[in-house]
Length: 333
Image 1 (cartoon, helix red, strand yellow):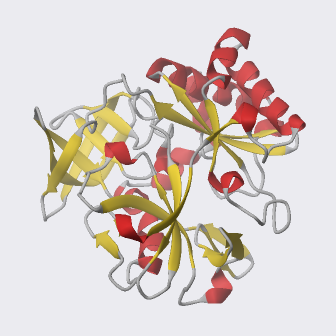
Image 2 (cartoon, one colour):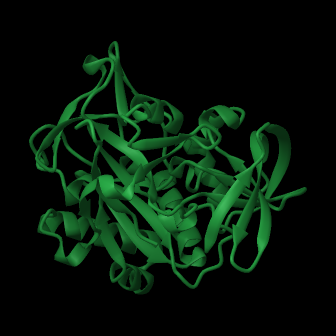
């Protein structure tokens, strides 16, 4: 379940780059594809966003907002609000903060590239990825994982690479939930052992982001097709209009390292689904969560299942930023 990156064009000529993030775990509406917008050609306040060259187009980078002397990471809902009025080319779901683009508006697609075949990485960068895997998992497990490691994100399409600013190396790894948990623990151990593994200049400690030598490497565990997930093979979901407040305790985190982070919790329904991939690996067993959720019926060809969706997690999880404190790495050791 690897992500693909897209350049879309609206009938009016505006363009946005979105990632069809693990769309096989999202509703499959005919003619529409769910995306996370990253870049856009027109914004209300151009000075807030840096310009990048994407697929030959000059687009504004929506991921970071310059506010005075600091940069702020925008939430999914804030990013979506920047682009949801694109001449009808985008459908915005208020309940989940997801955007959908029409299949006919997709102009370019960038597929993941295996690390070993990537021309966007230097030999030393490929070596850094291998060494990081080896330190986190041991040689045998790292060798197996490197065979299923792919470069995704800006290094697959960014013609500004190396010119405007240094980019993270985004690496997707196809793996089991067991290996994903081991990887989360291994990275936690590295950061706890030395601050040299802690990236500087980031507002939050994203659990799968690590400083290694001169590189910042962001790992994205991706679910294998044969692994169980409550959202797999979904045809549609039906969410309640009115949100609910819910307090629960986390009992299982095996699917919390993947997109979309999914946790088994106390009470009913059994699963909560966090619709932000920034929360991968952030929530630990026995965490007590105060949430605002949408009770949702997930419908497939063979079954129906109730889950609670957390559609705007930065606002709908109480004290969400506290989940990203580096001290919490010790919970995975």
